[in-house]
Every structure is written in structure tokens, then in C-alpha cells.
Image (cartoon, rainbow, N blue to C red; front, side, top):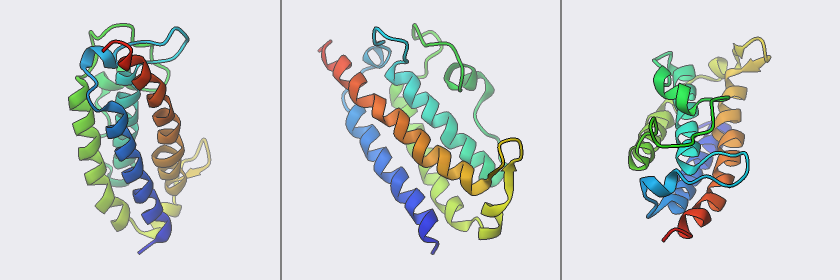
Amino acid sequence: MNPVIESYIKSMDYQSRIIKMRTEGITQEQSLLQLPIPANCMNWQLGHMLMYREYVLEALTEQDGPDPSEYKVYGAGCEQMTDGTHAVDIDVLKSRLDDVAAKLKPVLRQTSAEQYETIFNAEREMTLDDTVRLYLTYHEAYHIGQLEVLQELAKQTD
């Protein structure tokens, strides 16, 4: 058992619990509410985290990654979500986040130490381990931190 990999899994489990806590009872309409600052809505935050969990799964398995049409909506650098036209339902996003987490756990454990040390992104000089750490810990923590404010915004519409 690799303690570093187990820490990634523990972090993902913890973050998944926070996602559930912050999104409990939130409707699709509430998930699309925008703050009056340049930011993005809860629906986008969830979809964005999903895209990068799928990206990590792709990196580890060489299977297909995020759906390109969804990545246009939820990927890095995309337009602010101003309406729900292209938004995936919040309950579907939450379910898919759980599904990808369940797929990631055994793959993370089965990936060899040598594989984790291989260069995954030469341009950024990132190993596979660097990529996994970036997206499953730092990146998710950043976006999960935004869910609290968005949950409070949603509560104001009850």
C-alpha cells in the first residue's frame, strides 16, 4: 500500500463528502445562480471537477477522457455559464462524480510507482504523479471552496 496514493484517495473521499454536504437539496435552477462577480455557478463548479476527475482517469488508463462537448461547457477557459442551456442536471453531475471516484480508487492503487514517475506532460515537466496530485487535491480543493458561497446563495432563494 502506497501511503501517498492512499492520501489521494482519502482526500477524494473527503472532498466527495463536502460536495454532497454543499449540494444537498440544491435544485437545478439554484445550481445555475451566479454571484454578482466574475465567477461561475455551482453547476459549472461540479461539472468542472467532473471533467478533471475524468481527465485523471484517462491519464491513468488511457481510456477516453472527458466528453468533448461537455468539456466545451465545463473545461478550463470556457465561457461563464449564464444560463442552463448546455448545463448537465446537477443530480447527474453528482452521480457521475461518485461514479468516477469509484473507478479511480482501484486504478490509483493498481498503477505502479514507475508509472507515477513517468513524464505525463513534458511541456509543464509534470509526472503522472504530479498530475494526479494537482487535480485530485489542489484543483478540487480550490473549486470545493467555492461551493460554500454558492450554497449560501442558493439558500437565499428558498
